[in-house]
Image (cartoon, rainbow, N blue to C red; front, top):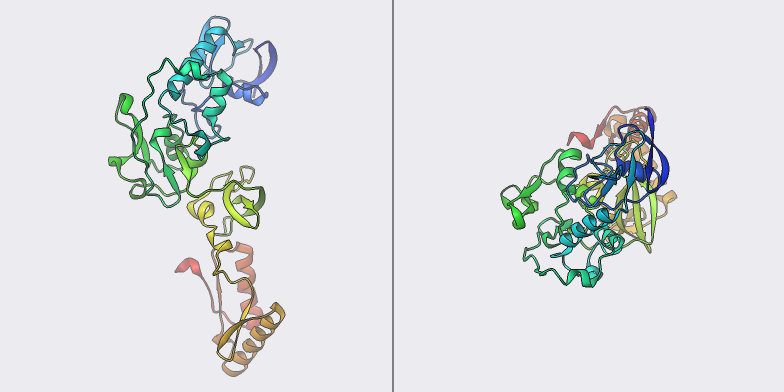
Length: 349
């Protein structure tokens, strides 16, 4: 694709033709504050925070304006600063000031933008602050929706539409009463929502937050085991427990997206009822055993059954949580080592 040369705040940079000013700045390590933009979604231009001045006369929003050869862009013009600051002030005029207890604390885009544009306590004194008395939707078993923290950026709506094609939520009502809602304002658990959590991970504030989440101390790269697709994941680990799962954006299979099982189905890993060692029955009781002892017992019982009843008395039952290669190996082992054609898979259940 053709390259163009533009100037941003006195810096000459290269950008791909057709790229937006915001994307061009981000690609070159330059920050333009924004709230409604996300790299996975089409530009929307809702928040009006990413305004810039072009060619010293035209005010535009950077997330929608495409670059052109020779374009001169100013992101810190006094008029731009005033427009941007006013937009942010209006956004936080009725926003809850509970940052220390908010799920998004230290990871909130609104905090970052407010600090960048220079919002002070004195700036907020001229606004009549009123809290939006909207009940939280806690019906979903995996995440909560707090309308009072919502800035109506629309990222969740567009994620559900553009990426998931579910359309479980949309804008509802008008004016100051506008909010993100399900059809008929039903609890989100009773809507079309599939609980994938894609909207939650993209929410720039704390309006959508995971239940009982903890910050991990490290991340471990892995592969989801819930089916044979092979989605890449990053396991959030705290101590010896898994406290969260993130999609691996570099994985070519899922590119960061996850389903409800892949994102939330990790509770079994640290569950106290999980069996972590082989168990064999002795005198009518299940007792722990070593792997060698357990495998020798299974092999001897297989040989006994084959000798007494024939190979067809045994079969193999595989899992859709395994890869195709693992399922193939099991089928081949049953047919060649045991001599039986009794092979099945849980995908048929």
